[in-house]
Image 1 (tube, rainbow, N blue to C red):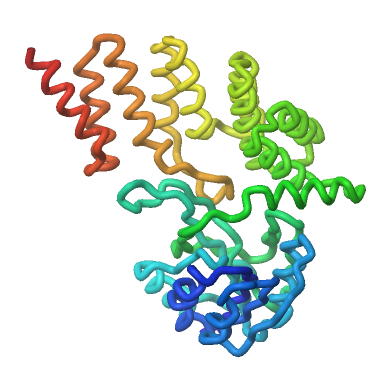
Image 2: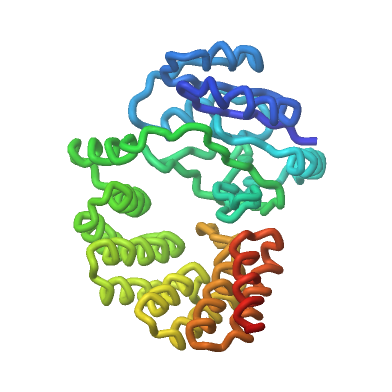
Amino acid sequence: MVTISLCMIVKNEEDVLARCLASVQDLVDEIIIADTGSTDATKEIAAKFTDHLYDFPWIDDFSAARNFAFSKASMDYCMWLDADDIITDQDRTGFLELKQTLDPDTDVVMMKYNTGFDANGTPTFSYYRERLLKRAAGFVWQGAVHEVITPRGTLLYSGVAVTHHKLHPSDPDRNLRIFEKLLREGKTLCPREQFYYARELYYHAQYERAIQVFHAFLNDGAGWVENNIDACQHLAYCYYKLGKRREALDALFSSFRYDTPRAELCCDIGKHFLDCGSYQQAIYWYETAASRNKNDHAGGFVNQDCYGYIPYLQLCVCYDRLGDLVQANDYNERAGKEKPDDSIVAKNRLYFLEKMHT
């Protein structure tokens, strides 16, 4: 059975750290904590779970901190978590099975990262991340912000998931501040950094500047395909915010240059036509969305609801507005099969019961 070093970087995480470590302490063989300047009880909490507690001065570089934590590991594999991550009871069982059966020739274990949830706690937004990395392979984190290790060698995609449950928001300006510091220092952003810089500009409502950076990123032609598709989507969101609907639609369609249509983009295109009352065109794109197959292993962000629930609900709306109550009701029931306890589906059922029996 392989051994695992959990390597974490933390700062002021007193409200979540114990929850995280309690969920994983008996699954790993070593816990490494690098504290980057906590002023609360974080270090005292960490000390209850491990003797491997280190101070690492924060230098506005997540990769530097993670590489430091990895450098202290001594087991076969390094694993990373953020303080507001947990391994759920369901995934703990799968994790133990993975640990017992993992081929030691595996270089990287990719695990699903669940980061968005519906009202019932069911994951709605997820993507795969490199989670277990063979220590002897010498993997190195890259990027001051949105740090990453590029997977290489023998990969395994595991069904085990890490669940991200925030209890408090992080500093909303931190990432943008780091990117702009790098630019002031004369650093040229690599394609991945350029992509995430543009996203930060979008989140901060700097839409014109975000558009410029997204276009520069796409025009360079050096981006990863999933980032290219996501850039087209967020470029469209910028244009919508500026009231430039035609440019937004063009941006959505431009995502098809990079791969076959993603359901997420098809839903956005469907919404565009639904909002302007072009119901037949909206129906086409929502039906296309519902027919797409998820490709979790591609590494992009996956909105689970776009592959069934959302297009079915929107098709219900489209057919209702066209006066076809039978089709509308049918699509509402399809949405109900995706989420049996959904309140919107329940309200629609009452609506159709009244409409179809008057």
